[in-house]
Amino acid sequence: MGRDLAGFYDSAYARGGERHARWRELGARRKADHVAELAPRAARVVEVGCGDGALLAELSRRGYGEALAGFDISEAAIELARARSIPHVAQLDTFDGRALPAPDGAFDLGLLSHVLEHVPEPAPLLRETARVAATVIVEVPLERNLSGGRAASRERASEAGHLDALDRAAVRALIDEAGLRVERELLDPLPREVHTFFADSARARARGLAKAALRRGVFRLSESAAERAFTLHYACVCVPR
Ligand SMILES: C[S@@+](CC[C@H](N)C(=O)[O-])C[C@H]1O[C@@H](n2cnc3c(N)ncnc32)[C@H](O)[C@@H]1O
Image (cartoon, rainbow, N blue to C red):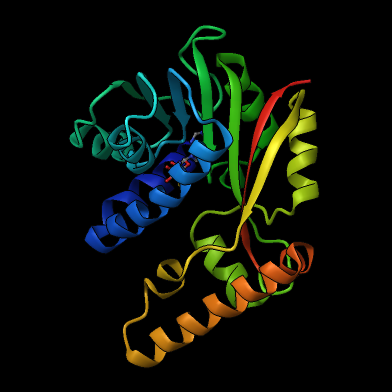
């Protein structure tokens, strides 16, 4: 994996600051809800692309899993994750983004949470995660939609390191390419706390609240219309075909 990509995430984590850390913690609560819904129990859990450990910390806080581990390409991310001293986390290490330093079947559950859209060759990383874990949960934002296609949205996604805008068909194609199939899946239009998190004025907060209400309303009426119109988070459990 190019040193450039690791460097990109090293600087992103180094300059992130306290507000971004809180943003990741807010996201982690939702992501942990998805993990618990899709795989209510797992003993040995590995997160590939664990970043600063926000999701591992949330899972540990909830008593999810008996032994947790995390790998990432970014040294800065792994240092932040280690500094949390998360209970039940046995291993936090960097790797080259391709080959995980773990034997076949070392884990019951692998997590790839908001990682595949950051990776130049996502199918091999998914296949590698499935090598070390019996079941894999993939979570990604579905950004190939009307709103996500706007120049401002694409620019924001690109600044965050997203290399591709995925829809459900594209995620399924990746899963298929990795030799896996989807066992269960869910879509999330995201709560109002997410849509208002970066609002710095009463007006921006009102806009965020209106956006959240509209999106949840459309989602309730038609999930497929919502999927075509704006970005939803998609999570699924994958098992070998
Ligand atoms: C948006 S963050 C997600 C962090 C965490 N999984 C979460 O959901 O909060 C994306 C992470 O993927 C990592 N990453 C990028 N390319 C990767 C690769 N090839 N293998 C593993 N991790 C990678 C980045 O360093 C970053 O920490």
